[in-house]
Figure 1: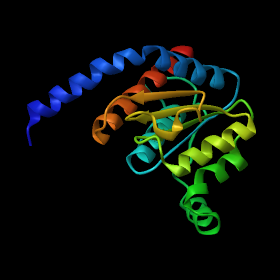
Figure 2 (figure 1 turned 45 degrees about the horizontal axis):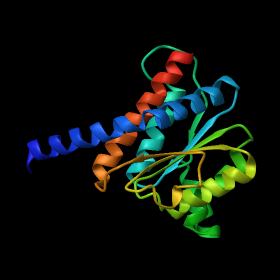
Figure 3 (figure 1 turned 120 degrees about the vertical axis):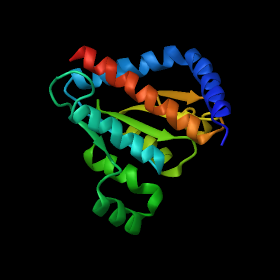
Length: 184
């Protein structure tokens, strides 16, 4: 393992992500507006992105940095009974869309996380969110994949390395949580 090489690559990605400030600001505004209007944030992803979804949801219901009220953040990745029942009955591609259909309300915010931007389960969730009047935020990588055009804002981390994309996604999640802390 070449530690210096990994750190240099991370610094390169960080410099490029600075160009995403406007999209990150828009994401912060979406999240704050959702919560201040009494609505909730629902999140989903697969694999490491599922972990990121759970992490962000926990920062909302618990706390991020400062003491504040608990806020409604739900990771659609944690209910194994729902995931396995929906996956069995409707196919895995529908596991998040089906939950959004039942849990989502107009004015909520769905955050879909996919390093490739092509995860079918996330794409179908974006389609369901649109049908239900739920705002949508994507966190993707590479070139944004099929998520481009499927969500209100798609923050694309310009890297082809999954680990670097995921590291930036959690940084962006923490920036959003900071904006939420500031609002509450």
